Length: 116
Image 1 (cartoon, rainbow, N blue to C red):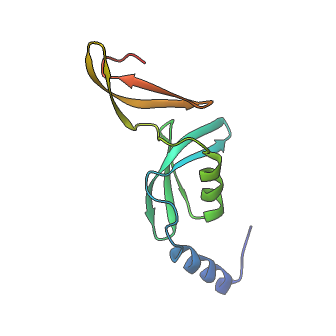
Image 2 (image 1 turned 180 degrees about the vertical axis):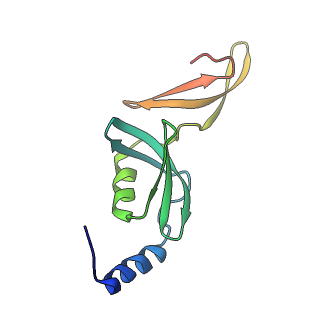
Image 3 (image 1 turned 30 degrees about the vertical axis):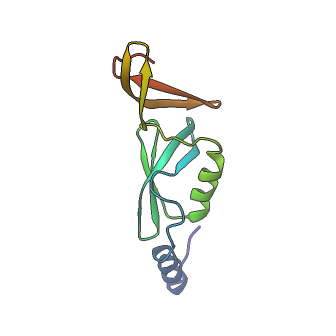
């Protein structure tokens, strides 16, 4: 949309700057881009803008709350963001790992020995 009414633009900017932080840093999201759907997480909130990092490494700012709300709702049961650290005891000892993928309700963890 295009706006030539400066007072309307000023109002929109002020509303964005005063937007409350509704979603905390670390909140999972799920968003669609031209090349597919990606999970991610909110990594920052500043002056009405959420910064979101997706599982493919891309980072995008979102100042339109409705977009952020939709992505949070679409994340559904996706609770743990890509990159979340894990620790688990196997038969031969304890291993550190990190979540590297989430698809169809299943998390993939890459362990410190590079196995998944």
